[in-house]
Amino acid sequence: MNVQIPLALRWPAHQRFESFVAGPNVAGVNILCNASNTGEPSSVFLAGPTGSGKTHLLIAACAQASAQSRSAQYMDLAAFAAQRSESIRRFGGSELLAIDNVQQIAGEHDAEHALFDLHNRCRADGAILVFAANDQAGALGLELPDLVSRLSACTQIVLRPLDEATRRQIVRDLASVRGLEFDDAVLDWLFTRKVRDMGSLVAQLDRIDRATLAAQRRVTVPFLRSLSD
Image (cartoon, helix red, strand yellow):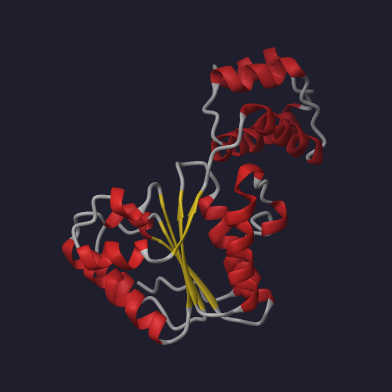
């Protein structure tokens, strides 16, 4: 299996630095943006809970590098249930490499060694390396001390979650872009009955958008209840 993404066309247009609501994470986002923009060799490690925007930022970094006519690749380690070490060893050869969900290889001897080798190889080549995981390197359960050391030596960005008021405004704004009007009652329903991380909220918003188009209905709490039945 070729884990490389061959064409820059597939960087989703909605996952860009300018569309990322940084909130308390603006300093860290600027570090990653500058690294992907200048092309100077560097390594960055993003840590944050599910839904904090790590994948968005990795894709944004790849898109930014591509916009500067530099090659970029993204690999999600969660996408490989088997032969993970072989996939990691085949990865590389670009000026920016983004590796998502590093926690997936914790305890996998061959995969950990493969990622360690990839780090050393790509740093020697002068590439930009961007890693992301749901916690900092020392807390992931990785068993290879040298890998933990390499990842801990990266520039560390810890993503803090947005407060609820900010997330509510983001959802309202995203709905408005889609031509939907979310009043306070609708937002209350979403935030008390659904998972409240941004990734889940955006996925729910997409579902609501499709449903309203199909039913030609405005968004109300009774309509949302009908979608949950």
